[in-house]
Length: 387
Image (cartoon, rainbow, N blue to C red; front, side):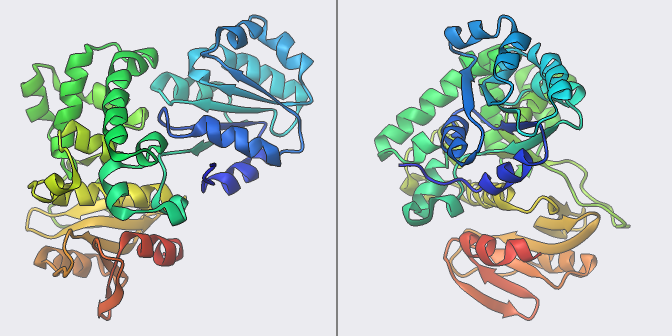
């Protein structure tokens, strides 16, 4: 069963604009499945190459010759970061061939991949990110409890619970021992696992570089470089503080989030949903889940921040367009959520009249004239796109 992905429309538009369309995201998020299904919509014939397949890799021993022999086709290259020397050849070919949708390239993003492609294919490439399943994509298959606990990686969410746990543990191990080194991270896998686990304990909290550095026995510079790499590989997300035109003394550290709550719960060694409910980090887990869902579904012109002052004003999530805040969101793991003084102070300072509390129930009602209570799925379906 193929579950339709929400990036289809964006990919379709980009195929009409760019000679190269890049679909990037973490391994096992469904990029290959998506593109093989999507190519049925193309009018062009396609040719597919997986650069982790030695036979396909051998076909590109002389890449320009191969491209020339297939110049009327859409050439799909999977795991393109395995062969970064292709990018200059692709640039030369598309400049000569001048066709739209010459290439669809798939990659588990890395700093090298992003640097190479942005430098050599500037103006010729459009990027689309494909993450794990969002709740909106699952439709009738959606269970918020299962999605929250096991996350959205297809093989984790669609499997039986015991198999999901085994798959997630294997994913973490493989990412540490094989995938991250293949993407270019030169570091001790055990240190990176410890770092990843420490980031899991801090998920939805302020990122404390100094504490992590001391615990790992590494410099701040090295820890920052490792976190940069994990973020480029879509394993970690940093949320920056909103600070435009605010005279108050603000917290400047970013907040950190593990980008999939299934991975988060395995790094925290939480065995099942009931155990999660009794864990003191359940609120952080719920905030991580909600922010990940909004990040997957938000319009391109909406940017996400948090807001916190040393005086106690605090907003979990600020949605902004350009430098203008348009909505504030409080995230509560509570069926009957109350409004904190810090949140009220924050929305008064930012002068926001479009505010939300997102909690686990799929309710939808006004608590005050400027504050709505709803579930995450309701917020995304009814309110996110109209911000």
